[in-house]
Amino acid sequence: MKKLFSVLLLIPIFCFSQADLLNTKKSSDIKTISKEVADDAKPLAYEYVSDDDILFSITTWEVIDLDQRVNFPLYYPTEISLVSDDRRPLIHYLLEAIEDPLIGAKPYFDHNFTVPMELEDVNRIREYKRIKKGIDADGITEGEEYFYETGSTKIYLESLGYDFPEDEDWVSYDPISPEFLELQRSGDAELATSYKELWDAAASEVMSDENFDFAQFDYADVRKYLLKGVWYFDKKSTQLRFRPIALGPVAMDAEEKFQKQNLDDQSTTVSSNVETDGFGAFDAFSDDQDQDNKELSDSEGEVSDDFDTFSEGSSSVSDATKGDEDKEYRAMFWVFFPEVRDILHRSFASNNKNMSKPISFDHLINSRRFSGTIYKEANVFQDRDVRKYVGANSLMQLLESQRIKEKIRNLEQDMWSY
Image (cartoon, rainbow, N blue to C red; front, side, top):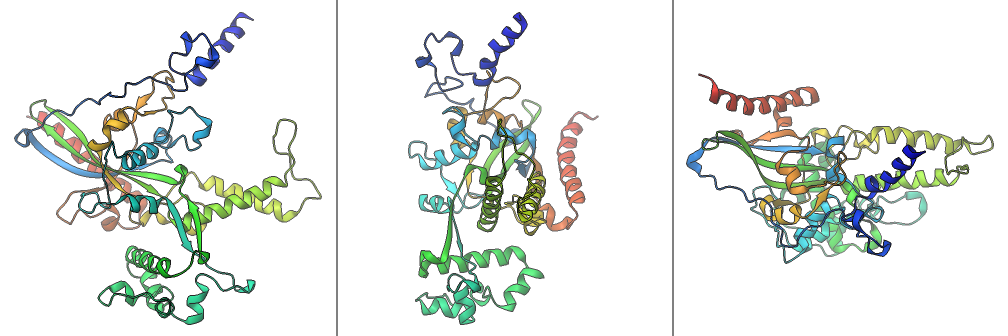
């Protein structure tokens, strides 16, 4: 009995781990934070590194897949109403750093920090917008149905008053034309995607909101992080070190967002038809239940199994989104990592090994407590992506990524070879 009492006494400590919880005398004084941090707390400053002290350096780009268990602290919590006020995912603090004028972190469209983003651009990417596909049988003309009735997207948008530029290549590839379909299939798929975004942007300027589907960005929509950093050997400290330079989140695109919503709606419909026992567990389907719902539930189970493998900007919610590993990694925005270190130093990720000692996001990234895969390195071939010259063989791409990593390690080891 004493052992049982001891176990029960320890449970609240490990479950909550609030700051100063063991010394609190009244329940009303319980703090909803896991660790107290001074507002003026600063991260450990980077030491000055002279260019003359760097024997060699290599710039790499890594993708941090949030489907991997070791990277869960960067992803969770996605349902912030279930946790204390100081527990938020990494994307929360990145957006806060951008939107808070006191922090002043500047977002960029590119990892070289040459094309800055405005706050309006950030707000725009937090809302999913997709032109409606339309259903011919419903008797209502909406969305893309206008394009097919007219026979040309360009002609219809011009009829609404849109002025197309004459010197832009994308204007020659109407999304419903055979040329555009050919570009998607056998041409440059990334170029076709960028052209389609320009056409959608043009449609959104002149078409009413009734022709579009809308959805809000959720923290759970982030699937990966892209990290640009520099590996360098400092001859003064005689160490190989890593310095993070740029960080960018990758989220699912609008098409994948709405596909996921449809699956969630189907799952909700099935769940509402399933009986539960006294503990809320699902019972087996009754004999008189609709067999179609049973098949739908089975298909939903298959989708959940596939959810273990995220592709770029994809949640693997359907067969249509599989095989997206060859897509270019496109971050929502890029931030200069030193600019967000202050807020990341005061923000903490969950530490499953010791809940009373959470780790700051700044420490987590600088100490490389994550699993990342190198997908690009600075090279003479315009910093080309590994997937551009290895091909569609995922295994060979991983081996090439490992080769780059081993090359960096060997450069350090060669320093001690005589």
